[in-house]
Image 1 (cartoon, rainbow, N blue to C red):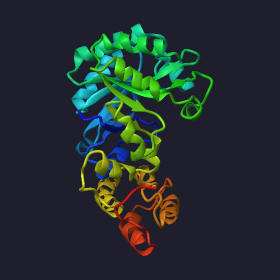
Image 2 (tube, rainbow, N blue to C red):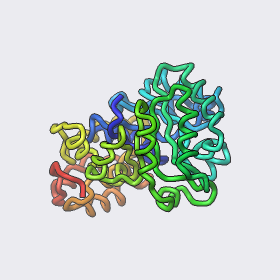
Image 3 (cartoon, rainbow, N blue to C red):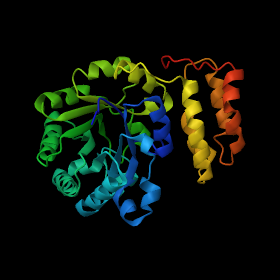
Image 4 (tube, rainbow, N blue to C red):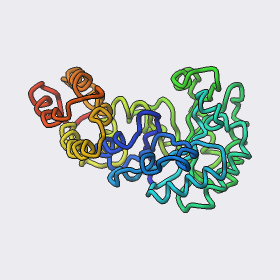
Length: 330
């Protein structure tokens, strides 16, 4: 599995439509689902929750939960659906997540997490990975972080994705937890030094190729989050600069390739806005970007959007001087 660059699991963002769209831009970036709760998989509509387009691969399933039994069952279902990796969420700091005992609050219970990981690994051949933070509340010294990872490492888990901020449990909103706790990249670098044989992926506040490159000298991979969602064509630059792939599509190519998918999904009952909302940032930094955002917002990102407008979207790009050239995202 190539984890040199990946896109983080993001609630309300990295659904199957977003992943299909991003895969049109980058062939090599590893994509993750939104977090899906183990109990929802075991009791809910598995097809609705887990089905994805084969063209999204490679794609990893992120699970939330704290029951070894339920997580193992969900991991096995994920394998059966064709995912390439199962990731356990140990980093989400929201009050709702903490109330249900999953996410970052599990950093308080490393032995329980270890039990979960062991059970998950016993039922699937897929790689089991974790995504966590460097600490929580006032527990933020490197020694505690090191000890937490050491306990999990004993289960045989080899890949650790680290958001280089601590989580403030119940004190900050999820948005505040993405910005207020300071980034401590040095913790992640030190972790790689201390665990040279494990795969250490760094995450948090990374927004450009120029920022990715130095991290790759001190960690095994980089996970990007909001930058990938708000400026998705960044993945084209990553494809070229990080994966040495010169065969990258223009923004116009991406939309042209997306249209058949949109039409097919609409036939299945998907609403136009459920797909097109993910494309608002495609022309970020380009001439005509404001027109593109306005047109989508007014015509394709409303609940009852007219599906016929998808047939004319390329004309809107052509005749409103939207820059579709292959190039960097500003």
